[in-house]
Length: 346
Image 1 (cartoon, rainbow, N blue to C red):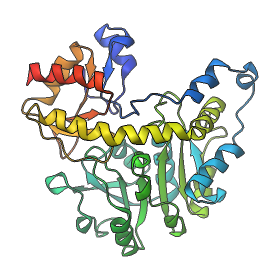
Image 2 (image 1 turned 60 degrees about the horizontal axis):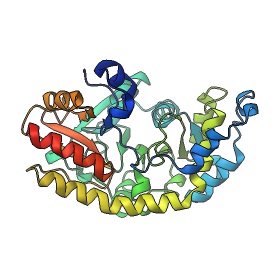
Image 3 (image 1 turned 90 degrees about the vertical axis):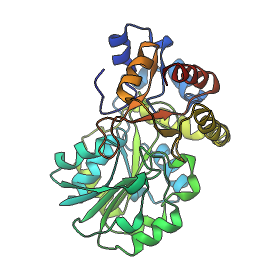
Image 4 (image 1 turned 120 degrees about the vertical axis):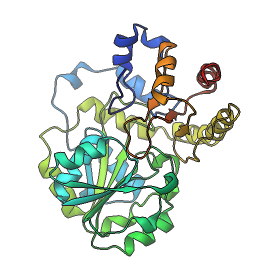
């Protein structure tokens, strides 16, 4: 199977491998191992046909109020969109930078989005796969785009350190993708950064709440930038079921607490399990691990796929290559199957 732009190609894997979906373990998509919140599933089990027979309520007042209260932001700063990738394109079009600085390796949607929005990508190679703020200088670019926690390494730039660097670069447009910041909520740049001009913070509702089939995400920006982003959107950017599912997910505070509790146990356990195989995953603050492997990652992924285990290869990621895999965090039983398969192949 050729390396896709994104992980989570479960339907393609069913077709290509000839295995039923229930037989596949997907370590390629960085989703909450707990699965979707109960309230989200109840929404679809008790679906009112009137919801399908009406256009979406794009005003979404309840969802907007919940998100603004959660992040201490004003409604004029919030933009809802059809997932993080759609909002990334929207942010680039609204800010209209000329040359965008991007630490590499990077989320693979970014090199596609930047030229598609009329800008030039300026790669910033990461030495020893570590984010170095001193290397993120404004020379040669008028915007910076990065994920924090970083994808694919899992590193986290602290709120204090990153915030100080941002203050020292006031003329640089900024897009920070905080898709995995739910796992380190105290390190978010929200809401303080919303007073900064030409700044967009992207957030995801599909990863932490394990509902990627429902394309819904959100972004916060200063009111002027948020208004430009909204003006560039189509009439109904998010479907009604997605809006209601997002609201149901946010209501489930017990789910959030259980998720963070499990994460603090399962991630270091997964790291230790991989080290038990002689591997050395990079330290991570996100629900995935970047793992150097002593063989071809592409070949290893193909062997694992034949056993119904999907992993993220890195052969076409600038700055990585075929000697890495990115492994999403899953529950203990799924990890056991992966570890057994890896032990046989390494």
